[in-house]
Image (cartoon, rainbow, N blue to C red; front, side):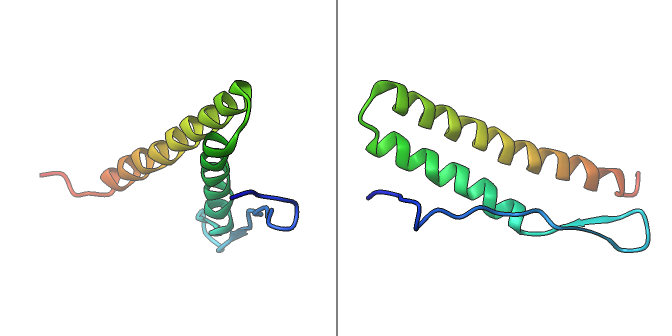
Length: 85
């Protein structure tokens, strides 16, 4: 499986103000992060040189850290709104 310019896509982040202090982030940001993760997977699987494989592995590791960190931050933010016992 190969990726070429015809199959490449990029995501854009759309921020909109809802009138209060909340900012809504569009799902296009998730699409861009998924592109990095899947692209890194393809690079690790199909790369010919060791440098390309290392770069793909590095991309997958960083994208995974970013995804996991997003869940951690979300849980911490939600914990702020829980009623204390």
